[in-house]
Image (cartoon, rainbow, N blue to C red; front, side):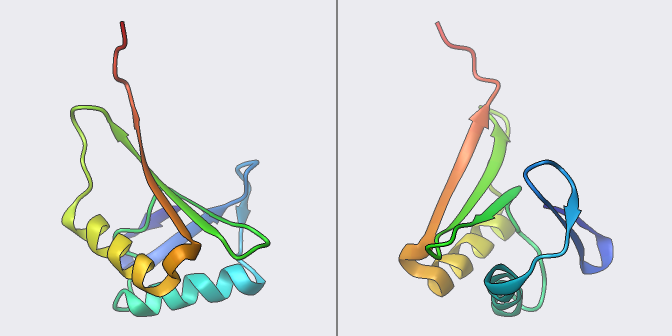
Length: 99
């Protein structure tokens, strides 16, 4: 996902082609936006919808430097309330050196 000022959000397929969400996935996104005050604020970096209804959301952060903003935390709470056990939410950290 990529969001721009004015509430415009772009969704991409796994092969990095811009797509318009369809079907159940589009319905879930509309419900999330509505529950989030009709805004995309806090939307994670990547969202996947699976045929069994599972919704995976991932946010990427630089280890030791980045953290979830209050806006992202609010979106995560909203998504959890709306999707319940169907939501698989995670933060992926990168850039950490290992021994």
